[in-house]
Every structure is written in structure tokens, then in C-alpha cells.
Image (cartoon, rainbow, N blue to C red; front, side, top):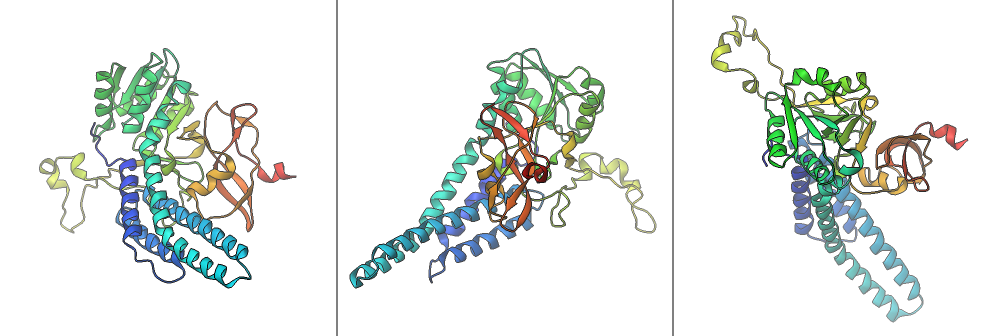
Length: 386
């Protein structure tokens, strides 16, 4: 299956491979091995982010790799301290302890590489894990509307077909027509599929039971960066009270806000995708040098969090261990208290306030009420603490 844009999963895997190479090629010398590795990964990751600033998964993977290094360093350091305490008072034991510390330092790079390998395995399985939840969200005889296409979306719908009978309405996603690619693959897989123009999304919404899209990135405030045309579908879904469901893997959850000054939320595509230069060449130039015709061809839409009904992601995480996954080093989460807005029986990323050592920080977290097996949406943290 070939879609018209580099998939974020492929970009995440290539980033992890690059950072793994940085770690493996780093010469380990001196006493502060952890800081040396962290600096090398941060430098390489920053260059990768600058090379493609709209691929936010690059920064997410970089943060995750840095978290792995910190955890491995802390584990080895704790082991070294324990060895020193057990051998205190005897010179031979102290010499053995020093040798153990040297061995532990040499193990840091090896353990970090193993951690990155585990991360790459998680990335490889992320779309499949999301697809396993398909039957929980799609029911018999439903009409699912989607915009454009992606590998994650295709796998999700294909998995749902194994247990459910449903129809899919696909907006074509002009000008690259990613929706046509998805429609072709679904029809070959035996899914009843209808292709519509992007302008027909609003009138077709009244006949739809759910809008389902794949995210490019999910921001810390709950906003979603998705293929162009998704915002129109989200507005139409809200107008018709149709659930707007977003699929996003863990590596697509960003611990930064959409209005951060260093975040590039969109990219402009070539005007040639929309116009034939030969036919419009007389509009592209003028006597004063300014073009008479400007062509805007954005790649993405930003969907505010109030338009998103549900976010389906891979894995099951507690609210305490999920925050550091996407925002390592941001703060130390001490306590998280969920509130009481029930959405659906599945995993959803929600924004809530967490109590940290240096104040209250806003983080994404997955909140699961274990006793009720329900997902809760975080809200007024201060009120809950009182």
C-alpha cells in the first residue's frame, strides 16, 4: 500500500534507528557517561527536528530515547551504590566495587541500545495494537466516514471487518487523493466503500454514525493535527452530533502545546498539485514582480480539542506512568486524580493537572477507572484535591 505522504510511523522508526547508531558509535570515556550520551542524542535529535520540523514524532522519539538513557543510568548508579555499601570497610571489597563501577559504566551503552531496540519493537507493533480495539468502537451496520487515508486507518478498518459488517464513506482528500487509495484497498478487502468529494462531507454527515481519522500528531492541550480537510469534517460531526474519533499511536502524542513558538504545525505543498503552470503562467507574474495569483495548499488541519470525541491509542497505561512516556524529564508525577466525565470503554488520552515537585504541570495521561473499566476525562484538579 502506497500513500501520498511519508507515514509518521516510518519517520519514528528511522529516527530511532539514527539515534541508536549515534549511541553505538559514541566513544565512552570519562566518568559522566550518561550526560555524554544524552548530549549526543540531543544534538543529533535537534538536527533531525530542524530538518523536518512538521514531523513532531521526531522530537517525541528523541525524548523517549533520552528517557531510556536516564533510566538505565539511574539503574546502574543505584547498583553501584549498593555495591559500595555492602563492601564498605574492607580494602579488597572496595577494589572490587571500583571494578564493578567500571563494568557498570561500560554496560550503559549496551543497555541503552537494548532499550532503543525495545522502543523500535513497540513502534512496529503500535498500529496492530490500535487495530485490535476496532471491534470495540465499530458496530454492525454502521456507516463510518473518514477523510484521506493512512496505513493505521486501513489496518483499523480491516480488523473491524473480521467481526463487524459496516460501510465506509471516504472523502477523496483532493489534491493528492489519499482517500482514493484507501477506498481502493478497502474495496479489495471486501469492505463496502463509497467515495465522495471533500465538499460532500457535510451533507453525508447526516447518514454517518462515526467519523474516524488518523492523526498526524496530538498536542498537549488535546488538539489534533490531521490531514487537510479533517477540520471541516470535525465541525460537521459536531453539528450533527456524530462522534469524532481519532486514531493515534503513542509516538504521536506530543508533550508540547499547539501554540508553542518553536512548533511548526503545517507545511505548504506544491502549487502544481492544484494548478497546471502552463495554463496559469500569465497569473503568476506581474509588472511589479508580485504574483497576481497565490496558491495555498496546506498539508494539515488543526482540530481543537473540543471537537474530538475520543482518542484511541495503543497500549494500556496508568495515569502515573504515562506522563513520562511522552514527556520525559518534564516533571516528576506524584499524584493524579481523575474526574468524572465518562466517555467510552477504551483508552483515551486526556489533559489534566498533575501535582509535581515544582508545581502543577499540564500533562497528557490515560485515566482508567479500574473498578468500572471506564475511561475518565481529567478536569478541575484543584477542586478534586480540596
